[in-house]
Amino acid sequence: MKQLHIYDTTLRDGTQREGIALSLADKIKITTLLDSLGVAYIEGGWPGSNPKDAAYFDVVRDVPLQHAKIAAFGSTCHKDNHPEDDGNIHALIKAQTDIVTVVGKSSPLHVEDVLQTTMENNLRMIRESVAYLKDQGKEVIYDAEHFFDGAQLDDEYALATLFAALEGGADCLVLCDTNGGALPSDLYGRFQWVGDALPDAPLGIHTHNDAELAVANTLVAVEAGARHIQGTINGYGERCGNANLCSIIPNLQIKQDFDCIPADSLHRLTRIARTIAEIANLAPDSHAAYVGKSAFAHKGGIHVAAMRLSESSYQHINPQIIGNEQRTLVSDLSGRGNILNKAEQFGLDINRQQAVSVLEEVKQLENQGFVFEGAEASIAIRLYRIQEDYQPLFTLVDFTVLVDHLGQAQAIVKLDVGGELMHTAADGNGPVNALDLALRKALLPLYPQLTDVQLVDYKVRILNSESGTAAITRVLIDTQLGSTRWSTVGASANIIQASWLALQDSIEYGLCLAPAVAPVTIVNQANGSS
Image (cartoon, rainbow, N blue to C red; front, side):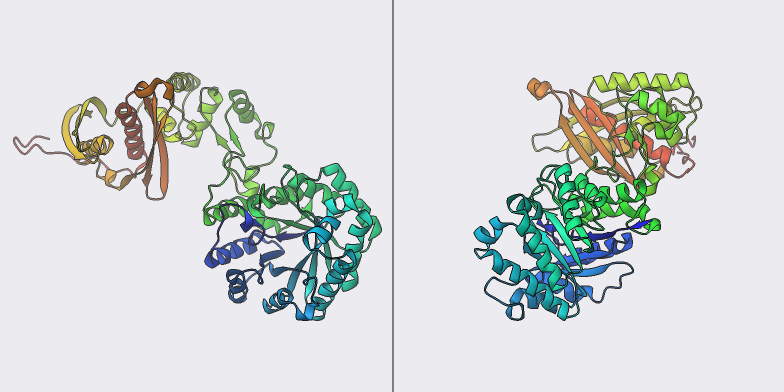
C-alpha cells in the first residue's frame, strides 16, 4: 500500500460554506467522528480569528483521539511585523497544537494588491513565520495560497515562495487551487514542474470546486506526487465547496491501492458523512457519489434485471465496503426484476405473474400521480396483498368527512373487518386527523399494537397547479413503530381521498410489520356472542 496523509479541514474551511454555523459542541462531535474514520490531521480552526475557535483548542486537548493530530491554522505574520511580535503567530502558539498550518501568498496579485506589500517582503514573511514556528517545536505545514493562479502570472515568483517556506523549515508544501478554476491537465503539469524543481520536498494538494473539478484535480495531483491530501467531508466549503474527501478517499483507497485511512474504518464513511451533515443542519445529498442514498439505487428495469444476474453489471464497487447499500426503486420505468427484488427485500415469495400484476398496478397509479420511489411501504403492502394466503385486515366500505367553519372536522368511517361491519366516528383537528382517529377507533380493539404506530410526517404536493382547485394532489405520510419508519403515498384530485389512500397503506403496513399479536375477541355485551 502507498501511504497518503489525509488532512481534514471541515472544521475550518468547511464552515465557510453558506448556511453552516457550528457550535463548539458540534466541532467536538465532528472531531471524534473524523478521528474514528482515521484521518491523519484535523484542522480545528483559526485560533486568531474568533473566540469559538480559540476555545476549541482549549477543549480538544482533553478529548482522547486514536488516529488524528489536531492542527491550528493561521497566516504568516503581518507585513509590518516580525513573527515574535505578531498576534496571529502568538495565537497559533497559544493553541498548543503540535501541528500548525500557515498560509502565505503565492500570487503577485495578492501580494501587491491585497497585502499591499513588496514581493520581497512577502518572501520574508513566509520564511520568518515558518522558521519561528519551527523554533517553537511545531510541525509546520505551509499552504501556498493561489499557487496555480500565481504561477500563471509569475511562475518564478510562485516557486520562490515555496523555496522561502523550505528555507524556514516547512515540513510539507501544500499547493492550493484557491479559486477552484484549474483544469486537471494544467494542474498535473504544474505539479510535476514543482516536483522536478523541489525533488526532496514533501508536497500536498488543496483544491476548491468552483469548476466542479476539485476531486479530479486532487486525484491528478496524487498521480503527480502529492502525498498530503486536504479536503472536507461532503465537500463543504466556501462558494462551491472544497475537495470532497468522501469521494477522494474511496477513489484512492479502493481503486488505486493507496493507504488513506485504516482499512477497517472504510465502512464508516457513509455513516460519518451523513452524521456530519445532520450536525451541520444540512440535508445529506442523496445523489452524492459513494455515500449518497441514491449512489447505489437502481430504477431502470433493464438495469435491475441485469443486476439480478450479476451485481457488478451496474455498480462500480460493492456499496457495503463504504457502509452504503444497494437499493431497488419501483416506478413506471421499472421492470419485473424491480418488483421481484423488492419482494425478496421484504422476505416475500412471489412468482413472475404476481410481479407483473403489481408492476402494472404501479405503472397505472404513477400515471395518476402516485410516486413510489419515496414510499416503499406502499409497494410492500401491495406485495403483501398479492400473497395467495393474505387476508385483508380491513376493507373500506365508506367514509364521510365534515368540516365546520372553524376548521374542526368529524370523520365517519365504515369498515369491513374480518367480515364484521365496523361503524365509527371521531372528531379531529382537520379532516386527515379525524380520519386517522376514526380508523384507529375501529381497529384498536382488534389490534392493540396499533397504539405504538405513530404518524410522524405529512407532506402535500400539488402536481398540476395550472388546474387550480381541480389539481391532482399527492400526499406522502411517514409513520413510525419504534425505530422503524416507513412512507406511503396517495394521489387524487380530492386531497382527503389522497390522504385516505396513503393512510390506509400506512396503517395496514404497520399492522403487518408489528409484532404478531393475536386479535382480541370482541364480546357483544348485549347477547354474549363474539
